[in-house]
Image (tube, rainbow, N blue to C red; front, top):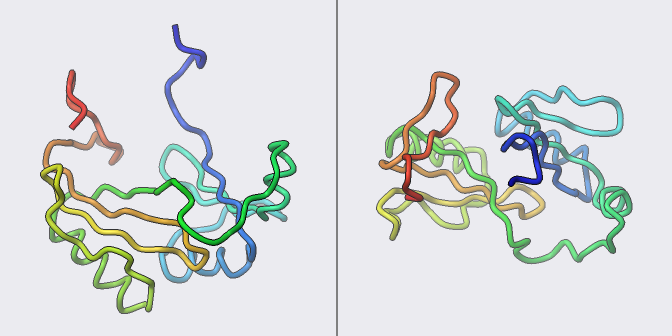
Length: 149
């Protein structure tokens, strides 16, 4: 039995040090639209929200000690593209905008094609094409039945 009545995400919140700068990056470079209330940035991600909130406030709200902002955070956000060409086009635009490309697009060990970039505070984003996955009408990934590829 699942703890949650429905298997879904509602919001992913990144704890950030400079919310204004990070909001500007996600709006001006990535092209997301901030729909958040005063004091928090929120971006509609087609079924869930990507939130930006000050790291110290998020840690306090979660009842945890803040962690250092340096280094890999053991999480990556991902955008699944519909083709290799789409991945390459995204990375071309990221490079043109001066975004840090941490791993250029390449044929991945799992049979797809992917690369990584970092936002201004080092949060990892993967952009990938997975030839084993399909999309529904809303653009959401539909995993193959009985497979994890």
